[in-house]
Amino acid sequence: MFQLGKTIVSEDILEKDFVCNLTACKGACCVDGDAGAPLSQEETEILQAIYPKVKPYLRPEGIEAIERLGTWVVGTEQDLETPLIDNKDCAYVIFDGDTALCAIEQAYNEGIVDWKKPVSCHLYPIRIKDFSEFAAVNYDRWDICDDACTLGKELQVPVYKFVKEALIRRFGENWYAELEKVAGELAEERKK
Image (cartoon, rainbow, N blue to C red):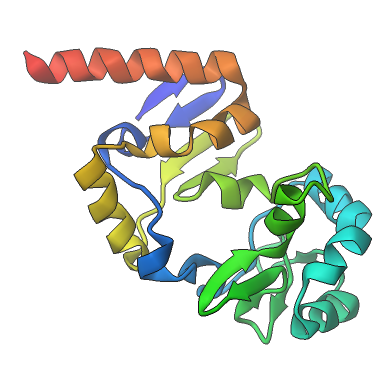
């Protein structure tokens, strides 16, 4: 672990490799698990605002869940998160064949909304835990992502490079530049 501004960062994000492999996992992270995607307060407001534009992209089950539960929910640990369909799929999940995709991202890709998706989804496999004085930046190892780890190793892409856009979105360009500097220093140390 190392400190970077007001974050405590796990070295795993620099040392572990990762590249999503949708052809292998079929978007399992959107349909497996026991909670929706973590959200910030600001993101709950965005979801409420864009829901009418995203709704045409959703499956009937997703629409039903959102209209019954809301565009976001308070989870069991009092965290804000996306609602689920029958405690399984994220309500915003759509399918291309048997591959789970995000309806919000689909609307974004088509220029319908200007928000890509919750930053927690964009950051995965990195998970952020906010505390009063700092944020913890950790690598979340999940067996459904084994193929992503294998592909990342083959392509030699560390986690932090795979989620560069999302890290910049969350922490800014300067923070990411500092992260790259630390990564370079650690790489040099390993060579010695």
